[in-house]
Image 1 (spheres, rainbow, N blue to C red):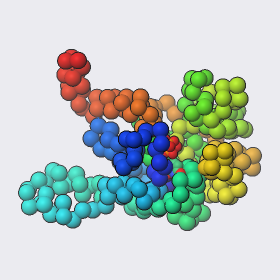
Image 2: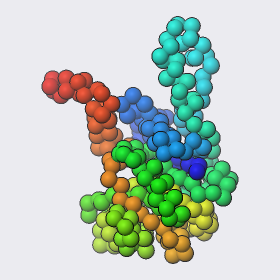
Image 3: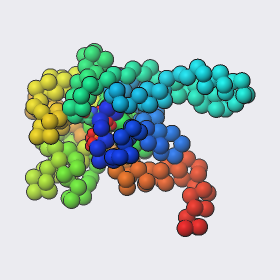
Image 4: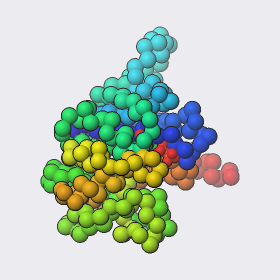
Length: 281
Ligand code: UTP
């Protein structure tokens, strides 16, 4: 299976921070957000990955491309640990970078990779969202896809005042934590939300999703909405949601970005530094 990581958006909610610095390159602990995302795909067994990026986001590509000059300098200085870290990043997966010329939404970003996935089922991982948990979110979805051979995406239970920030899914439970979807609505007000299950940013799609993405109209905000295409797909083919029990951080929000940094620093063995800072403040 291949994966698409959309990372070409303007990150308007986080301006001016994200004007020259892509949201997906914001550091969490000791690496950029998008590296966490690529590692999740690789841990799920996916190594052919297309990152959808933009002309204004060259640093994403630079992060993963080999940098001969730097490698030679590290070698010369005997900095072998740093050299192996740097090499590991450029050898992490078979990465392709596809430019989305215009920021016409998540659905459009996925359409840009239609040739790359070449008629096969594929995973989508949002480049600004970190998921942790065991199995990791993408691995959990791949396992469900293998059983059902139908599209499946992860959801979490959200608070009623948050419905306007999420695609909301509803359906009938067919197994514990797995729903057969009958309705999907993009960012409804609480009065129109069919449930409190919010779409999280990890998906496996059958290639038929492209037919619906091509049919989808540009929404009121001028963007092709993935949720609308998923809703159309659900009327013609089974599509499932899976309630992910792990943690998800939307790095496009200040709260989740800070939280990810603190929680993942503790998990990564930096808890003594955090304790020291907190004890002084
Ligand atoms: P978001 O809507 O969270 O990101 O899309 P955004 O559009 O960059 O941010 P805001 O809403 O303006 O603050 C989720 C993911 O989809 C990518 C983003 O880069 C992000 O990783 N995306 C979004 C694209 O690749 N292309 C788009 O046209 C829109």
